[in-house]
Image 1 (cartoon, helix red, strand yellow):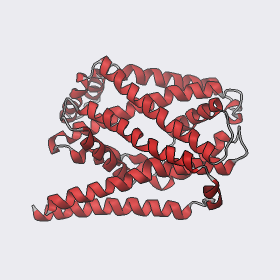
Image 2 (cartoon, rainbow, N blue to C red):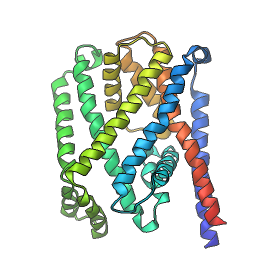
Image 3 (spheres, rainbow, N blue to C red):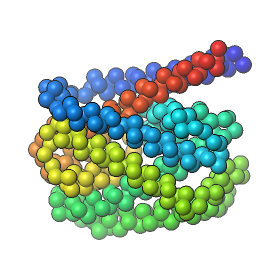
Image 4 (cartoon, rainbow, N blue to C red):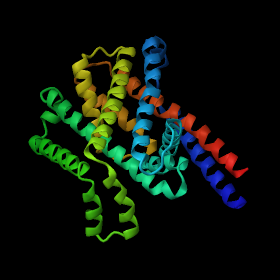
Length: 314
């Protein structure tokens, strides 16, 4: 038992070290304009930092709600799980480690269902991103040159619309998930775990979508405030439409943690260049949003992860 605890503690330390190493690498590789940071509106940046805990409390509320039929946990424990998930997510491609990391706060026999609950919450978030992304594309239909030059533009729009409707249909008919797994002859052990998804009624699923929309509203607002803080003068409508489109593109691009910030910044510059020549301001806003919403919470999550493991090991 002692050796097992030692191994688990070492594993957690390696995750934290990898996450910190990744953060350090990104800051070394970023060519930040420190003069622009000094000139940025500090009040706006403080507002964005203040919205960060609101963002993650909303996500924790959503996760707590998703878990209520599996294991009832206080909101503070759900928040700790979410923060640990951010830490472990930084060490994995597309942050898939987040699904496992959150479950460290759950009882061992509930961890598979806990991961599935996290996936359902992510599904709702992707649905919101798809819906708003389509709205953003429609608003910018005649402004973003890249999309206007696509030969099969109606086909892409039709694909996104069809995908959104399909995901929405399955989201409100979760019993289909088990049937699909059975159809593919997936191990009965896993199909039984998925059965708990049937406990969610349409009202529950709509509530999850609402929380996902509220979260989206928070980080979209943070983005707009940061653009203003660094001097990018873009109208609210165009900013929102561009942000909707940016997040839509991001969900279709696979990436490793080491390239995530670069991907986000590149897509932001590509979309926003239709509205502003302040490319540096756009890059700074994307970088700061990543730092505030992911790096700061991951540092907090790492302290909880190590403290919790150390106590158990001792």
